[in-house]
Length: 585
Image 1 (cartoon, rainbow, N blue to C red):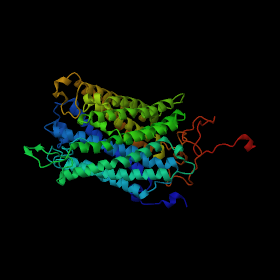
Image 2: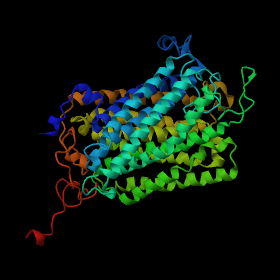
Image 3: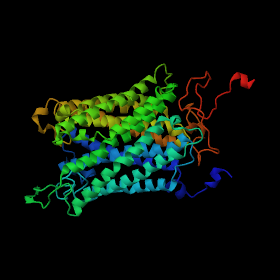
């Protein structure tokens, strides 16, 4: 009896409460796109305010009566938009798509496994994430609105319900949503690590795995190690808000003319706990994007990855260093200068393995036969974004320069390059690359290239320009950028930045139309349309239940292209070595 016959299930069991890793991966990816609509929509409202801070917009008052009053965006709602845009993009769009989405879909296919180690836990991880999304969106509809303490939720703004509008039920829902997200991510990470260590097929050693699997493995380990700190911080913050404790609240706080009865706490404790997770989270998201770039560059460049093993060791070094550099986010907190010096040195040191990855990606293009598929275009642009984002990170990772640039738009530009552009381009590259394997159809390349160019022009201009805003002294999270005379020479940049980002946002409409049209009406895909060497392309498109009739055996590494003179120019991992001529005779 075939696997498909055994898998005859109801629609709800197969497509909603499925335990198939491929379905769960697609659920995460589609949920990320859905949440991305909200996050991008909020960013458009932010950019309208920054481009035209004194404009009266009655249409927006009618569309969003809770945010606007008499055609003007309320300042406290502006802070809510900034807070929720950052939170949803980092945790509910990028993390969902890059780690949970592609991780669930591709790990078993890459290592030759039938499914994840714990399929039911896998399903539970997704259906724990869905209520977290609901709570985040619902926070806009409670009294006083959504959380407004920033995506970092620093106390005392986040610890005192009466501190600012948005510190009430909106902040509580934010904390509950984050608690569910952490539980979901932890379940997924444990599943990823167990699957990679225990379910690799015959011949699939750790050093025969594609680099995408290595990056997902390291990201999962980092999540398991780092998320407990944020879990503890969230619990203590909830107790400060509703239990009368003072973990993060010092004595002498005055709100509304009244001295609060808190003592013994310190907001710096929350900052340490948050950034102990917050900085590894950068690499939890960036590393899978880099892994996808390696896979895509090898396939569409028809060359083996340069420095495969050195790239693995560089990834491992990055993973270790990422756990010990969180303090560079806190240089302006009164940190001891000697401690600041340590964090500066450790942060700059992490650029060395990152440079190794960047050089290996570039070297992989040497004498390549580049095929400019949209996946390859996004992978190539990602290399440029890594360089630009990393360059800005040198100044922010050094205490002496960060003192000037901290909390300025220089930080916003750098952060959006690394957590916005690099990760988004990784999502797009992975989507265009694995779309045939996901849905059994080809995605339209012409629309894909329009999507690429419009997105790239918009985001590169906008986030490079934000660095100049920061150098001019413009502070982030500022409701009216014209309020300070000393920034008048650079604030004009807000208008072209907004226009560029509107262009990038419009490009995502092209992407979504292309994605859903191709899902149902695209040309049917072959099993291996890209002539790729890794295991997922040895199974039909779309991949069936249980992935293979018989589990494959692996005989070589994942990137053997143009090495044996064959017309196809590649050797699949499942093709054994040919015996010597004398043996054949």
